[in-house]
Length: 131
Image (cartoon, rainbow, N blue to C red):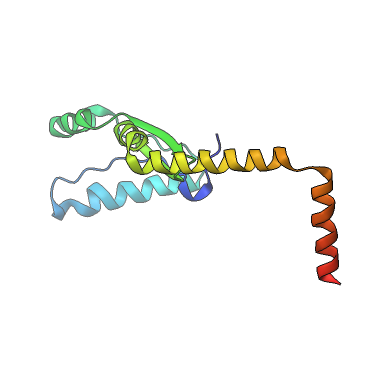
């Protein structure tokens, strides 16, 4: 499945900050180095878990499993599995899905009832109205 470009997300590189006074050393410099590696064509790899604090590891474990699910019906991208599952079960998604299904069935019936004579009539009336 192709995801439209505006919904594609880049891979994330986690950066941690122990104190605001360490901003340059802990955030700015590593971020600039990651961007430079990307510009140089290198693969940027997330920090190994041994560099993360115990508190961050617990916080990460409690987060939902990452995913890349795109809802064609609603035109939305989801990056967490629990958000995707909540969306699929939501009334908004179900209403849009039902509306889309109903629309497709109606178009299918209309196409099935079209006869070659109907198409000629439409083409002739279009030609006459443009003249």
